[in-house]
Image 1 (cartoon, helix red, strand yellow):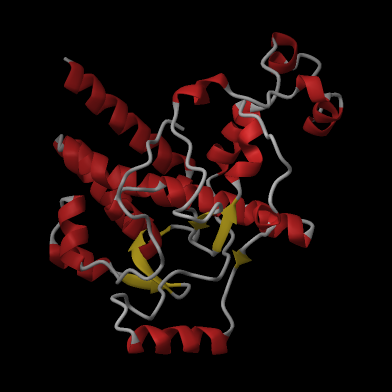
Image 2 (cartoon, helix red, strand yellow):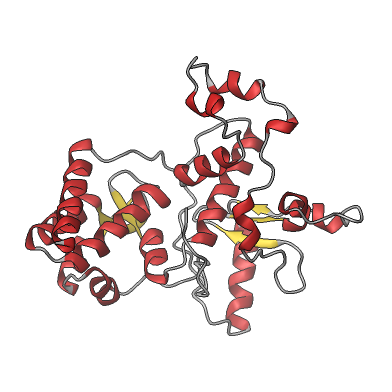
Length: 286
């Protein structure tokens, strides 16, 4: 998606709820406005999309480009990158927006839901679907016959017709990128999403990056870590140890463990925002 990985520490789930003045400063709003519209929905704190769209429209009409773009980006974080509750920008999306390093969390969510749905044998993917789609398409043939799909067969038919030689295992654009293949002395890279955590084993994917695998993978590389929610006794023990050892993070987690079906904004609201953004870009280039 062209989003670089920042050096900032991504969301861990132990962050404190952002202060209203920090949110207000980032969104070019007043502290009192944030506090007046800070609500609890589905067990999560946050701001309603209706309020943010109203403010975005007002800034667009006033020609306040920076303020418009700030709130518009936050709406994208919730509606496209980290969807959760319909018509609501929850505290997780706001925290990730303020941190400014969404990539690890995006990957965590995608791997989390792929693993969860595969283990359950079905379900709804509640993550950044455009990212999943782009990753999926990047490994499919790019020939005109396959891309144009003139005969209009279903995806299942198109995929069943592919062979091993048709799959694009290696994307040449990755050759110039730095690849994270370990975390300190640990060969597995942990990823924390908005609904849980998982790790991936990049050492097992070296062949896809055109690096040779000289030996069979170590058994530790094949071990998986996946969690959706911790048991109460374990969580209590972790909190107790954190207090005893003076670990500097809050014990209470504000990350939701409830998967809520995502819905979309009315087309009219989306079209109004797109028109306003296009108009502002046109005026900016004049």
